[in-house]
Length: 289
Image 1 (cartoon, rainbow, N blue to C red):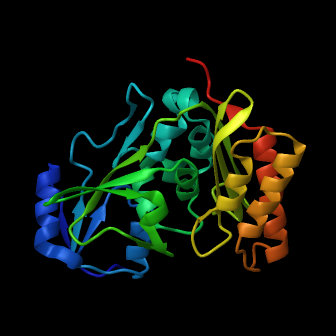
Image 2 (tube, helix red, strand yellow):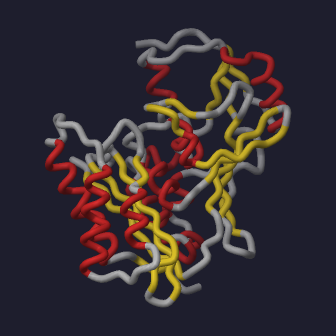
């Protein structure tokens, strides 16, 4: 199937891209990695008058850390950049564990973290990771910048909270306040498939006590789910068989799976409980520099 006709624009600065977006409004789409948008265009699941390709804008392909440990990811930071990132292995094991599990190598070479978050696919892995890490999106417009917590970014399946005229230019993970550990586990029918179930776990600890816990679920609801009750069960406690079992059970209760060709709802809920228990028991620490 051929896509509908559209005008192609390739701005060379963010201000130029924002001017184009302001000019064309809701008739325009932003292209970064294109690994979600391109198939939708070809299948005519979406149509528009103007495609604004931001790949020629310099300075958006970064990922870096501030001195306090805050992590920044530009709009053109590719999945493959994160897959091979020593920075993530040193500072953020949950992201380091998830990066190699995103789709397949072809998609990882072009797709972007920020684009994946904005696509708002309920089976998208990065949204669960960023929910577990209390991540944020920075949206730029002609009027300035706006910070959107990832917990508020997704408003429904394939629907985000970006306003007309805004471009998501950065994702950000706040600096941790304790010893960092975590993991991302994913059940897929074959390599590169969407998650049947995914679980992101991100912990900060002071000694043996959990000071902050993030647990989020992929593929078991209309959008990625933050398992708040499971998180609260861990904070202020040490990890042992009792607290791990309780958190895993509460996470499974937070899941909203449906029976489909990937498995029954009961099976998916069981996988959530198993994965949370396993991720908490075998969580990976940040690697020493």
